[in-house]
Image (cartoon, rainbow, N blue to C red; front, side):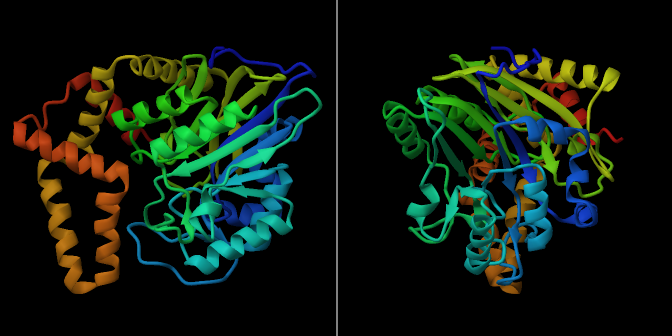
Amino acid sequence: MNWFTPIVAPRRRFRVTIGSDWAPIWSYEDVMRKDAASVYGDLLPLFLESNLNIVNLECVLGNRGAPIPKAGPALCGEAQTGIAGLKAAKIGVVTLANNHSMDHGPESLEETLRLLCEAGISPVGAGMTGEAAAKPLLLTRGPGEAPLAIINCGEGEACASLDGGPGANVYNLRVQEKQIADLRDAGYLVITIFHGGREHAVMPPPYVVHGLRALAEAGSAAVIAHHPHVPQGVEIHQGVPIAYSQGNFIFRRGTPHYYLNIGYLVHLDIGSRKVEAVAMTPYRMEPEGTKVLAGEERAAFLKDLKELSGYLSDPKAVESFWNAFADLYGKGEESLYDQLRSAVQRLEEDRPTALSYWHHYFFAPAHREYFSDGLKRLRLGTFGDSPEWAREWVRKWKEREQ
């Protein structure tokens, strides 16, 4: 398999197309309200021709509940617009193990689940109990073809299912490794979808690389990830395709930053018992909808992504990228102190929000790892020592404008 070789599926193959963060809000709300299908632009035929389509629903739907205290925005989309938008592209499955699946409280999650199920769209990755959130989605195919199991887990942050309560299925490597292995041994072809990592980073943190490879080694047929809002590299690990971040999809906020408006679909062509081919379709989010990258822009993006992907094989390079991101956009040494001081000050001003920040910092791996690594580097006197070549990549991914 090769991520960078286009594929055309023979009829005997079953194609799964996976998109990343999707929400009927911001600049795409009016577009979808007027014509739901138009937001997909020339990507629409790829969905209509695919056997199974999956996106990550990055908000709640409907009007139940109220915004919860959290570190970040509470996102809610109009029910009718959201369901129409999903159905227009034949989306059959939405993943919910993310940091927005309970943004307006348990009532909003319950309403979102109801709306999806009534529309014939299968949710996975969140539920009204921890057991329901962790339950994989099992799908049958034709005679002689291995059934599919979709596992969705994520860091969850303020929307995580805690102590068996409502919310998103929390990423726990040992738990998911066993779940994957059990399903594989039962004859299922397992697709694992992860939502986590550090937002806006050009390269996944070391703990994400380690974790997603472990999910592949446990028996996943493919491991696909999102949450950073920018595209990250891909690899084939022990025969298993891994996409570390697809970037954004139907999630355009109107920012001028180039890589916040660039992403890629993942296509898995599945034979009777295995993933036989994998490919990506890169696109750009424009005001009127998405558009497939073409010509020189496509070639340049794929060249950069291929070069970035090459660094994944070098643990020292992955660490250098992570350190460079912390040095430049983790906002440097003083920011470590500032963030902690600010969180303490919030306790006096708004205790519920302050506690959500503290929980965010020390529960969510992306933030816990940032503080842990940053404090270690401060103690060792190595904070700020990241190489310039890694900083150049970080600046390009974070600062390039349209």
